[in-house]
Image 1: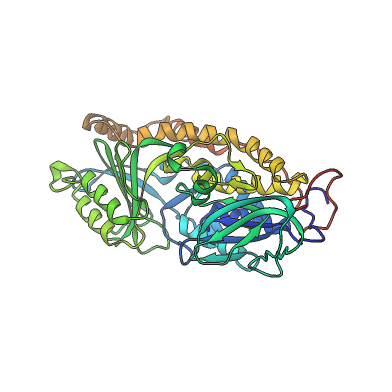
Image 2: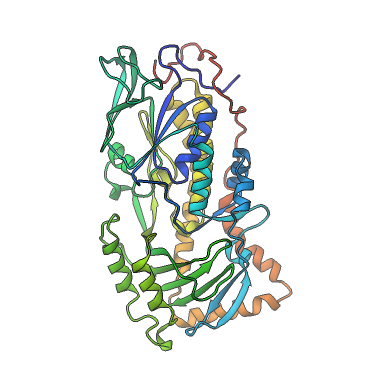
Length: 458
């Protein structure tokens, strides 16, 4: 069958190590297993991370989810948000609209909690993919095709290549024994460890969009039912919502700021920055929503506290040798884009399809992957930069004008045209790629590679 990956009679299935068990990594593992690869996923966290905020599945990502067979799972786990409302300083709703308008969703587009999607992907792959939790890569050393002696893969029966002529990537881990893989994929997020090891320090690839965002769980003391509340003060946006099936609520705090120095693995430092940014907000009705102090207290107590900058990752290349980046590790578009999860699903589909079709080694596959994804990424990066500026208002006057527009919109005869316009940019980003039809993903058939083409581990 054209497009399948043929195992070498000496090495067995091609072996791939994926760093990161959030969304991009397990999605890629799903496709690679179906194409006949032997896949290992390593994750620093001791177990699957099921926290996080709600994420959108739009446009091309909906089609990828359908091809994966998980679209119905996503629909069953939908947040099923009904309304969004702006509130004043004492929490009174002053403008309410359908949640679909706030989320810019159309057709089969949906919304799901990030943790629920991670769970769906893990459940779909855990019986076919090796997951290693509580470990992390410490070094990557690419070996050219050639003889290596007395090296044994840490998982016998998958890829024990001792004494054979092979190339690949020697990988060491914080805890596990060293292993060799044909390919390594960094699907480990904005602060990618694989990117640092293979390409250098993160700072050279980051573009800060001028704001920070935090998300965390809290008791649903406001009694929200599939509703999201927003409150704005100059330079800041506060949000609280409750989704279907979750007794807790989620809080989100966004503030405008130049780039700040902190350790992304130290929540205490991040909490201090968040509290400094919102100091005084809501201490009285004249200073903003009086719910804000409770939100800050909830952030301190939450076990799923998240904090990071709205940042883009911009790279000239997403691959180096046999190492390739995927999702946020390659091209983070920040939460401002609303497209990060969709881009992860689409990227996994594109990369797996390119690897399955290449036949002439990873370099050609990685080139095809980049060519197919670059335009899609560029559109969403541009939208992220635009939306990041629009998330927070400059003045109370601007905030009052926004509230006025929201209040009168439901009563206007042209409200549907306005709603369409609101969604237009987001939908343009969601559909900014034409998915290729890859061969039906079945197990490798043993078809010999094309004449003159080196295999992944010749």
